[in-house]
Image 1: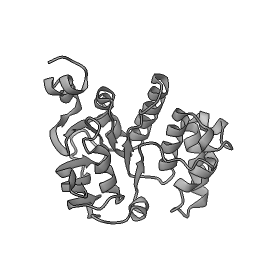
Image 2: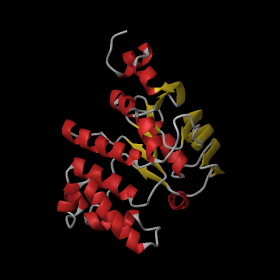
Image 3: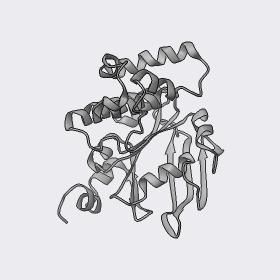
Image 4: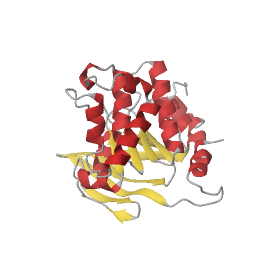
Length: 257
């Protein structure tokens, strides 16, 4: 079963249903001074999908995520989330609406414990009993974090910090989760564990946009993919098709042209 089918089953969708868009970018543009980092891209993620955005360093992938989340001002274009125009809305408002980011570099509160970092992820929630339930839920997903729940985040390994970054985002109960380079700097076994958890969260019905330099890994786990080069989308399609595209294989999968 494909990830798309598993996710639709998890949210009760029928095989022939056309899921509604959860995220729509139209002519999204982001500039740094005089440099156009993102040059008017179009991108969609349907409800229940896991979509990847791949490309080389400096392609504009992280900038795109920050533009979506309100962490960078837009030079042009629009962002629609769950049918609502949220262009220019502040990041804290988007979190309350169910849009969460797992940032590149993890962004831990290093002096706080694992439990305190999880509490920070739930800062916008008022359902205290459900928050406690979700803490146990993420500990079930990440038993290693449970074993170290009183340990400060700054003393964790890179893999453990990545687990905590994902767990912290889950604590906000996101409907759309943006993941920025979750495999960066991790040992292969830890990458496998992190991506197993990403798939588990996807099967629970969370829609995802995944930015990842490991193109093969990203295309293996996703439904659809976009290829970004120099701030522009140059290819888009089903992930299985992109895996066999000669240009993608030559540029990102190590195959000689």
